[in-house]
Length: 335
Image (cartoon, rainbow, N blue to C red; front, side):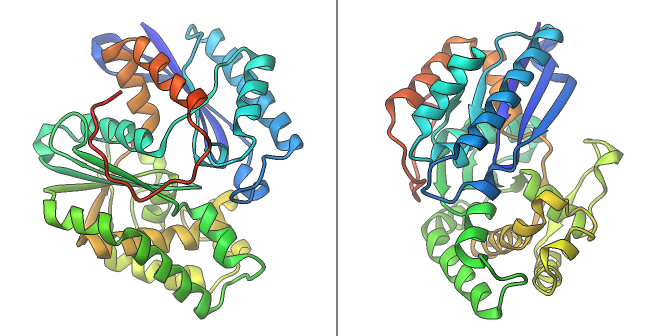
């Protein structure tokens, strides 16, 4: 069986086509179309018409590519940058009308649940009680669990792109006072969730997302060309040193550092501050960088639970009003 998934993130539309023999999604083709929505959309504002046009073109091409690879009808979802836009439903309906793709948005807590599933399958049962951190462009997802799905999840408005707009707008590099203000907000937002992680005392902690992957590379982890099976870890002390390096440079010069791509250079500092603060408050000194995340979680649910579960999740997108992520811990295993 060949399946696929389309992920509309804050910087790009990504397609993964995978063979699912034996219950494991093995990628046979991946593709990416750059959008940089996070640079064009301010938190709480509409997605502009020109950005919608580029989104329609990218999703349409992703759908056609999936069809050419024998995986038509891919589940398609958009993350926080679309989820938080006031014109979210209009954007989703435009994409569906012009491409035939039923793009939906997922609640942040559902994103965390699916990401946890991907990480759990990658790490295996020997990892024991598992904590997860995922920094996106618009939100930070946190999860903890002992089984296939997490025992609790949280979605917080602490995405790297969002915080860059909020705290570093017009300042490159930012001032020390701006950095202090950012740390103060992150600490305040994370306080209750971090206390729960400390109380649970996870045996293993993992991080996912391009933000953490690039920070790991900056801190000495193996480059991506070495493949997904090389163990990559991120140490809190190294991440603290990376913050100092990033804070001293304008975005254009950060892009020259190992692992920092030009499209993500501006938000790399905010991502590093969120990552370091989250690790410090949760008491995590070292985390494993996991290559499987939300896209693999979607593929796994499709393999294990069939297409009906995605239809249920998609209805949430039509029924729910746009809202900001909130620091809410909830019981899972509901989708």
